Length: 151
Image (cartoon, rainbow, N blue to C red; front, side):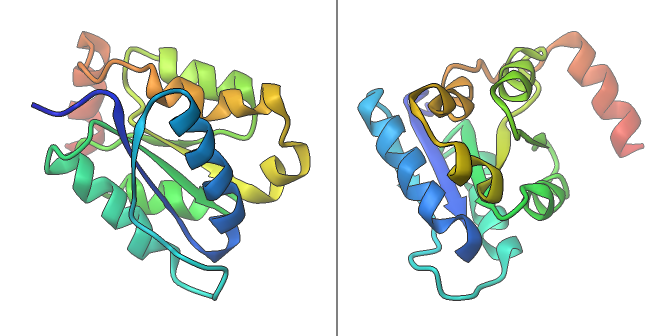
């Protein structure tokens, strides 16, 4: 059984600094974090790390993940290519909370480092917190929408 207190986190070079802050925050909340890279600010390709996070979720290693890149857009696009993964760009705490509350549909928030690094503050940590408190059981609405997405 997957431990609900474990989250997979991945970033590209543009999101590396924010990823470290997110990991520290999650650990403060008592979560175990699986960091799938990148391990530096050296230029790299974001899809590699989006795929690693999604594979951990699909393989049942974790139920949730967090992606971090420059804008959040590229990572969310790459993540949404994976069946069963729901990624959304969360550039504010409202969108992060809405994604988490949206019928347990969003398993992977994608955080834009270009935005969050400018505004990182104790209340901004909330962007990574909803992912940790989300139930992963798909709702009736999510199952219905998934049929439309994949048909």
